[in-house]
Amino acid sequence: MKRCTLCGRKISNTRYTYGLGCLKKMCNSVNVHNVKNLKGESLLNRKILKLCNKKTLPLTQRQLLTDRYLTLNLLNEVPLDCYNNYRSLLQSDIDTINRTTTLMNLHSCDVITLKQASEINKKYKENKDTFQKIMNGEYDVLQNFSFDIVRFAFSRYYNNKPYLSDMTQKLQHYILKCGVLGLKIKNYYISSEFLDHSLQENPNDITIMEGKIIQDIIDDNYFKNKLNEIIKKYGNNENFNTDNESLAFENGDLFFSLHNSCISVLGNKQDNGKWHLDITLSDTYDFTDLQEIEKYINNDDFWKGLFGSVGNNLAMISTSCNVVNEYEITIKFKIENWEV
Image (cartoon, rainbow, N blue to C red; front, side):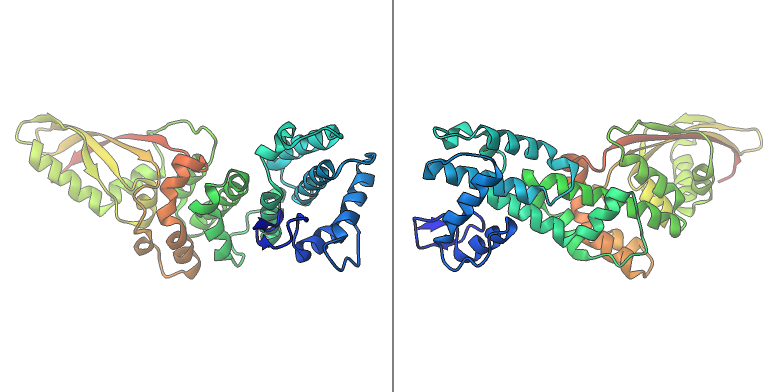
């Protein structure tokens, strides 16, 4: 049984290309009205011949022209630059269609189908307000975030469709940019800067030797306990130099910033029994360990919902979608007169 070219549903009449509902929809899009039955497809074909300034074509070529024109027409309603290549390819095929053209001659058919263009059009219109914000460079973290948008943006199903992946990646980038602002609102300044850095196409590795993050680390109770453990483990001699040891911060800002880091310590014991310490922390910035991120967020419905919805997909983003990009963080600092 044949399927409608637009929606993919089965149709019983093999003479025609669309079901009646889809035919009426496509006819209305080119100002062909009052179509009552499937014979209206011939009206649609004739109208598109005229719109494309083509002379009479055989039925097969008329149908090819109609298909390519309607595909382009649907994409033209989606003002996202990621579809410019699709549009150019479609227009080139439309221009070259003649009485002898076959499906094999149309390169755009291997790239985008009418059904796919319809899905792109539908998804754009469902999220039009958000896409308008993206195009205007607006990141309003205080808006009512639709979790349908979040599910669509981070869905493996949609991200595995090449014709939708550019759209979903724009939404991912937007949502995470909103996340940058949201982290700042919650006074998570360090993690907001690190997240923002990861949203670059090719972020540089960063080395930090001064600033707020170093003082936050020194003041962190988990860090203090870890440092005392290291000194007890390696400090039998007056001097020691450790291998890398794992260090997982548990408070909000440092957790988001350095959630799975390593620490190495060069220790020199002073005559007063205290220690001079050269400390290096290193971490690969990614999201592979944020599956339980909800427990690190205060009771805020927006953030609990946001991270709860996307947490398990963030690793996929960084590796396959190239929205969040990994980079290395190295933090170096000294502590003098540390007492265990």
